[in-house]
Length: 306
Image (tube, rainbow, N blue to C red; front, side):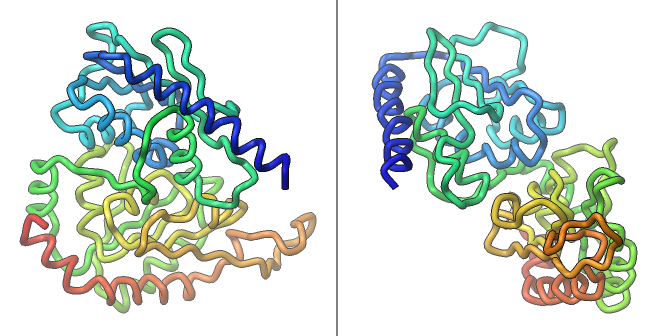
């Protein structure tokens, strides 16, 4: 118990010292560096990004990240977003996940840890919030929320036609849920849904805006599933080896599904979560229930700028 308490105290004391140092800085341009963070990691960092934006309200903010994450975060920041690589930044903030136990301020560079309290069992986004606090910021203790450009939302409302909009959000082919097509057939039979299947060539802001209009999204533990949760869509997320506690949908309308009743041949570990053995009918039934609970708000969002 005492070692854990000491581990908690050290990063918090460093946060007090860094907050005092940041109080004397007056930058006009900030560069947020997410490195090669995955899309889901970038979404989990949104509360920390919001707290930095509030701490320096008059700063232009440039985002260094993978192309899709950079586009979505720039849209989230709105007019304050600045192109990366132009005017040099006066304060560099490193938000890429790292093994740091406490924040570090070195001149004009601030490194923010992603999980300073690894002993705590909580969602990955909560670890990012804790990390921002050790760096002297004060993020709201809430789930990530992605703001969308009004023009992109208006375009999504114009393009959404047909029955309930259901998104199918799958990750890499080797890690994706193998029963996604079967779940699609079951949902289509009961809901008569129009399906959204994002492509890497699609505009990220347009895709995120369409996700906000969905009656339900069926996703594996992939970046777009977490984008859907961040824009307020109901999400059914299927899990294999990944932990629902750590990386489930951070949304009040999110559900994580998994099974440990594996029938695969050895050497599958006994009691492990198995994506291949998760039943499509179970997932489809939960998705239909969430879609029913969403009605008629999903239809109203297509007509009104909610």
